[in-house]
Image 1: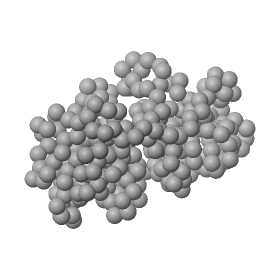
Image 2: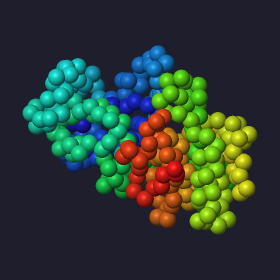
Image 3: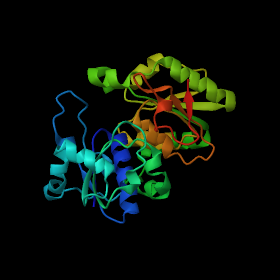
Length: 293
């Protein structure tokens, strides 16, 4: 069995599920989700999150205390973890801890019984099962009636999504220091770039702070500030139906762009994914996406 640890919001949970799903398919074994960390109190070390994958049609099976117990000893012992990383076939059950943000070449050499502890933010882990993931990440509910008009507008125009992540990037000191905030200049330059290559563009702005966007993001193009009272997954859904995507340094809008089926899409990313960590130095960059420097 493959057990993948869930931590973070919807986008992070999708990365963790996708990597675990790919490994479980490769090893022809079951995938279990460990959501215990989501139930813990973070004591302001990071943002408290809930299990969010329930919005999708994927079948979720959760690890029990008994399932986790077989990995607990290896997970607590630093020396054993180090040995596991070098000798993946040395024992039946392995705790595999992500180190850094680059793709781990040894990932697909892991044995059948593995506990995955990491974020796995690279399509290199799961690009080859894209068709399966597109099925797994279908939203269970129908599109809300009041969003249908907006969705039609997105489909019929040369639509560009802009995702502005603020929320805990502003309110939580640790998140702000780690992730950093994107300025207005990034979005302006991204739109200038896309406008130079596309005619008659229309902008659709998605954010957890849409009031800030209305006051600070002004463009010389038709602009829609998207507001609704539904689950945030509908923002991701509508971003995925835009022709092009300008994403934040956020796994949420990363998935909005990755799920976009437009073969001619342009996806723009910021120069820095984390504070002082350039996007180009990571494996977060998907094929044919563009970094705005």
